[in-house]
Each structure stands twice: as C-alpha cells, then as structure tokens.
Length: 341
Image 1: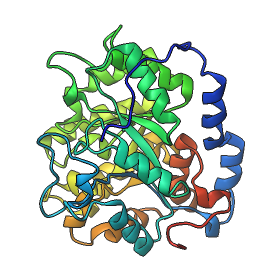
Image 2 (image 1 turned 90 degrees about the horizontal axis):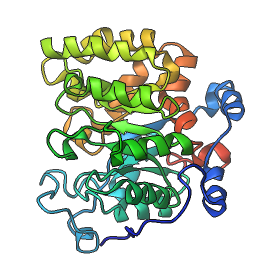
Image 3 (image 1 turned 90 degrees about the vertical axis):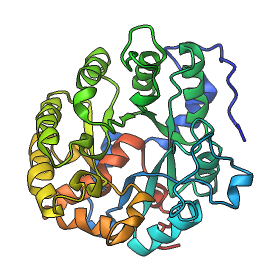
Image 4 (image 1 turned 120 degrees about the vertical axis):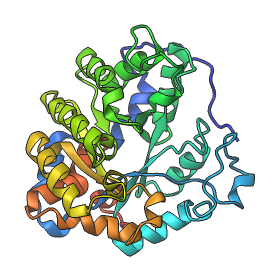
C-alpha cells in the first residue's frame, strides 16, 4: 500500500517552503533546552531506543504488504508489530523509540508512518533512501516524509547499483545527504558487511557536507574478530569528524556468538566512549531481532545501562544524544511515556 507520491515538488533546494518549516520545526528542540534537560535530575532522564524496526504481522500484511522476497523470518513475523513493540517498551521502561524503516516493507513507509501517527509521543521515524530515484525526486521524497514524522534517513549501501557510491557527486545520495544537512535531519549508514568496505565513501560524505550528522549503526559493524579489530581502528579514526556518531546497538551482532558482552564493553564500547564522548553515542536494541537473544528486549536495555557508571554518560547515551539529534520525545514535554501508559 504505497502512500508516498513520487512527483517532484518545485521548491528551492536551499530553503524549505513556509508550510514545511511550520510543520517541521516544532519537532525540534533547541540546544539550550536540551542542555537544561540533560542537566536535570536523573528522575527525569528518558530512555530512548535509537534503533529498532517494526513490520506488519501476518494479519496486518493484507493491508501493509511486504516487499517482494522480504517476508520477515517465520519466528519473528508476528513479533515485530507495533503492538508487540509497545509491550516490550512498557516492560523495559523505555520512553520512546526511533523506528528505522525495515527492508521488509522497503520503500513503502506506510506501516511506520501509521505507527508514528498513532503514537506521536512515543515514536519517530527514519526513512529508507531509494537510490534508484533521481536527485530531485529523492529530495522531494525526503521533504514529504519529514512532514509525516520522519526525522532521519537511512542509507543502505547495498541498495546502490554495484560500483556506485553513496557519495557520488551529482548522485541522488549526495543530494539527499546535503539536503539533510540543511534540514538538520541525520543520516544513518548500515555497513552490514563491515565498515572497511565503506570507509572511504563515508569519509567523502562527512567531508563534503560537515553540517549533516552521520550515524553508524551497531558499532559500525566492527565485529569481534580479526577483521573487525582492523575496521574498529577505522571507526575510531572517524571520531576526528564532529558530525559522526555511533549507535551502541545490537550488541549481540558485534559479539557474533563468540565474544562475551563484557569483551564487547572492554574492546569496543570503552574505546568508543573515550574517542567520541558520550554526546556522540546512543543506545539501541535492534528490536525485533533482539527477541531471539538471551534476555530479549529488556536484557538489551539492561546490558548497556550496566556499562554506564557515570550519570552524565548514562543520560546522554540512553536518551540525550538521540534527543539532541532527532528532537524531544513526547514524555519530555509533559506527556506519558511508554512505561506509564
């Protein structure tokens, strides 16, 4: 059920039309208010899950069909719905979440759009960029989805044609990346097969447009093995670019069934904390995939929380960084959190 028009909007690439500004700006929070919020007592600290997915369950898929060949894994098909997520968030006392558009619905953002619309104080959306679009239409698609509660863009480099790069000058990826800088919309990059294959591409992005915040998913996919160790040095080197952030998410993917979470803490998390600082790190679970791991959703929250002994670091990583980049969640402006609902 495609809900997004593809006709380009004839607007300036440098300034949002006034109706777009009026709709977009209320979702943002000033640096001053975020600083004041982060300085408040720990009792007001929000836990924000900065990385998860939702998809239609088997029944809902009649209204929200899956993309061709992208039916969710059988064990998770009926556990990745919005309703299932709400139950997990309530149990784990998570106050809000950034929903990253799943590949299962590919470029039809209808399911995530409706989840955000139904629970605007709990959810924000991160759209999935379509590399097959021309630059003008891709930028128009970005602006349309910003109006619908999407506050970030995901670049999946494996959706580009072989040999093409995210940072190609004149390409739609670079056009969207630059427009995101103008709109203060962060871009997340998924290096599923390893950071080393995308390092130079990422450097070109961040140096071409320093105003765009770039976020690397899941520790940059620097798994706990020899190749991952080499890639991790590249990840640490990206700390020289102030626009680069890292998600402390999907710990189970980095452990890869071979390392303990304590090893991940010592060999990945602590060096990242030292290099980037807490203000450029953010927590995420990778729901619903985390449900197949020991401890499930709540266990993922508890693991990262246990790594944070410093209250300021905890406030930033467990919610503050996400709010600085994506705007305040509803509970922060006086509404109930998922844990209270």
